[in-house]
Length: 302
Image 1 (cartoon, rainbow, N blue to C red):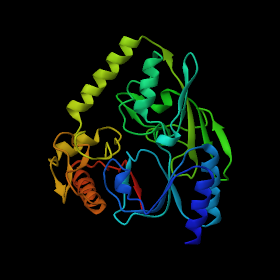
Image 2: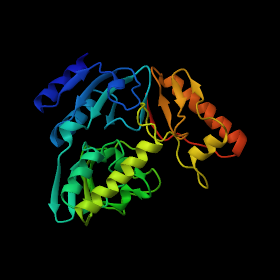
Image 3: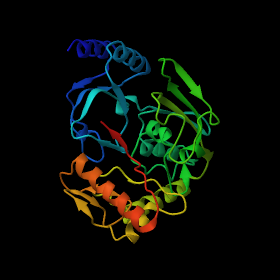
């Protein structure tokens, strides 16, 4: 295809590897999803800008993917270009005594390690989330009482016209699992974090404590997209699902975790259809029995 040939030439010119017909199941923590037309592993800002422009000129659909930890990809895959901001775009550097700059593909765990080594506190509750910092900003990820909004000083992004911009905390419109990027084609490229000076031993102890809690309470041994449902106002999704007796409910190899009712897990070879059918059943049952309306947290990629 001429469009793909143009994308390939642009990728080669900017040292960005391109993987034709790449399975999305290899790049999502759910381990679900068919092939995309091509996956481009972004290596630099200039490459991202040029490849995005090329996609638009060739009228090729595109989507951004980080670590794939909050994604449910369709069994049919994605008929377009996946721009992956991952390992090749994951530099983290310390700007001053309490500030870090992170490229969007840096994982939260990697950022947490840098913060620990620099004796900076504020990342402890976020470091265990299995996503990239770009994705975490996009959805204002959070855990154990903390959210990205608590530590973000500014965000660099590529706007819909292909120009680089910088947003302040006030402009980012952070709220529960939402930011100014939600539902838009803006691409987070870099995040500046404002942390606080702390003690190495205290920071490490808090990280280990939260890691132990995750291991004890969450089904980390099975593929999933993390918390499957958003927290409804006035309650908790896991409590409502458990209350309705839905732990262990399954469709195919998709199962409501017996360890934590807020997680739908892949016990073997679950399909996107299996997961969505099970989630629909959970939503309908919880609505019927409790009156609460649950919403899916993962983004459906199709």
